[in-house]
Length: 148
Image (cartoon, rainbow, N blue to C red):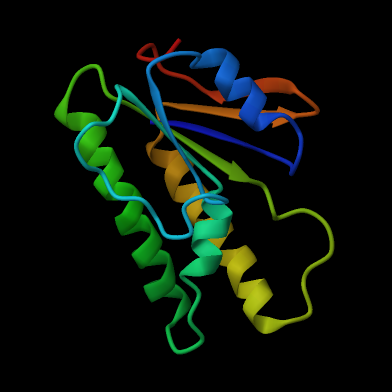
């Protein structure tokens, strides 16, 4: 799994397109309001863009933070299983860093920010590669040989 993060409108999408130019299936939260699930007819590289938006969609005031985090982790674990099923499968996750700046006043928005941050920590721990993109410039935070 390859995780790419950075600020909003900082070039994450462009950077990923340059590093995975062909044979990709791209799911963007702006086009797919619900978490996509692995299925047939996918290309060897699947890109999930907008993790923070899918997390927000899952928000429910009646559920605890732990339950909400677990729901989102399970969505990603299904994709990780897809990736592990075939040697040539690659999963690329793109998530905007929403942890900087002013802490939201509304409880639900603070919870969204917290859950997203916790989810990114879990993703980073399990990812083979993590890149941070700011202003179009990448910095590799974590890397193993499997990825370019």
